[in-house]
Amino acid sequence: MEKKIGTTTLSTVVSDITTLRVDAVVNAANSSLMGGGGVDGAIHRAGGPSILQECKKIVSEIGRLPAGEAVITTAGNMPSKHVIHTVGPVWHGGKKDEPAILRNAYTNSLKQASRHGLKTVAFPSISTGVYGYPVSRAASVAVSAVVDFVKAHPDAFVEITFCGFDDTTEREYASALQSSV
Ligand code: ADP
Image 1 (cartoon, helix red, strand yellow):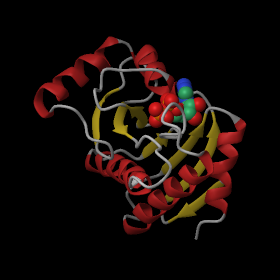
Image 2 (image 1 turned 180 degrees about the horizontal axis):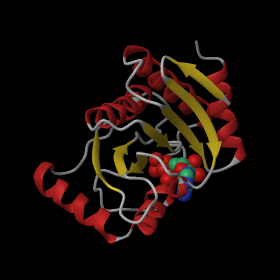
Image 3 (image 1 turned 90 degrees about the vertical axis):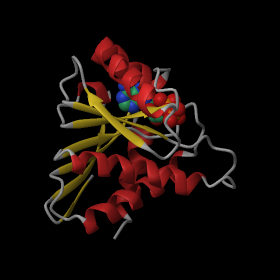
């Protein structure tokens, strides 16, 4: 699935995000920035120890990363150049501001990317693993946040990719992208 807004192509793909050759892959981190399971573990394994070193330095400067915020490191041994670490919300049934926090995670990741002049960015399905956010709801929040940002900054990016680890997840983002305006 692809959609073009200004100079930016929005696309979906099924892939291991650690293999993508993009300016930045986004990490669904946790507030400690010390690594973990899921995509976070995969990124630290593929990138090597330099990413954790940089994360420790960030934590020593700013402390824990609140949900919805984003910071940037290099990507170590991965083919991508940078990792943007963001923290999605834990799903508590939808009454604890989860959509607004998830939206901030996407928007603040794109702010970091554009601040650093990065043109190609890939997102995993933030919060829909261990954090339990229902995928179809997360996909509509994610796509709406990214589409709104790109409409407001139509020449900032070349390609933004929603990377599903499995077909079912990718289909949810493709369908959210299809129905977005
Ligand atoms: P969270 O804690 O934010 O829920 P998870 O890492 O548990 O984050 O899951 C987020 C999504 O990332 C899930 O859809 C999971 O299948 C997916 N995922 C796990 N490993 C990878 C990977 N290597 N590349 C892309 N997506 C991945």
